[in-house]
Length: 207
Ligand code: IMP
Ligand code: MG
Image 1: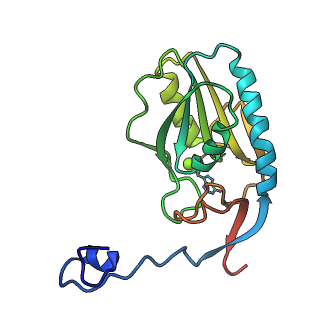
Image 2: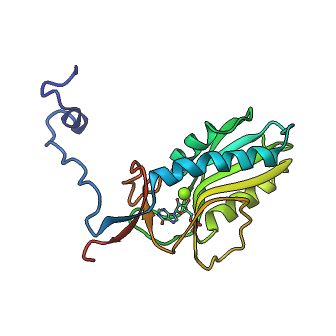
Image 3: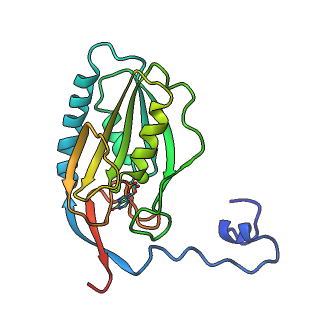
């Protein structure tokens, strides 16, 4: 480490002479991680099956396919899925926010930044972690279809058993789960728990 007498990057960021800043407090304490809903073993067995289904649906001559992963929740699922897809494809990212901070119900989907400019005439595979209200995928599907792709298929790891506000077409679903807030394998609560290998229910800390 160079450049600061104390050696701590946190102190260095506070600036010369400033009081040291407290580190982030960690996960919120109002909820806790509870039972496993989908185990790491179940996910590991299901992902190659989904990839096989997708490859079969794309057929022997896919049209310059692009896998569009919805950040940040689909990061881990997409990374695993891609490695089982025997298809030459390109990867693109879309960022949508709908559950800011500690919200546990959709606050309305909003696209951050731009979609890739070159979706026209290509097979697009939209990958997300979970289908809940349908706002996120509804927004993305509208935006993608407006760019005239050759085809659009949507894959989600999880689909909540909920009355959706939008009728969403989703060709490939990993697991149907109950209508509970979940974390792990990419899904977060206030940014935490994405690195848990299984999908867990998140419950009030008092329960
Ligand atoms: P929708 O727009 O309500 O369908 O929600 C989809 C997005 O909200 C997903 O891409 C997730 O990022 C997030 N989300 C929905 N349900 C959960 C959950 O139970 N845990 C964590 N994130 C969720
Ligand atoms: Mg998401």
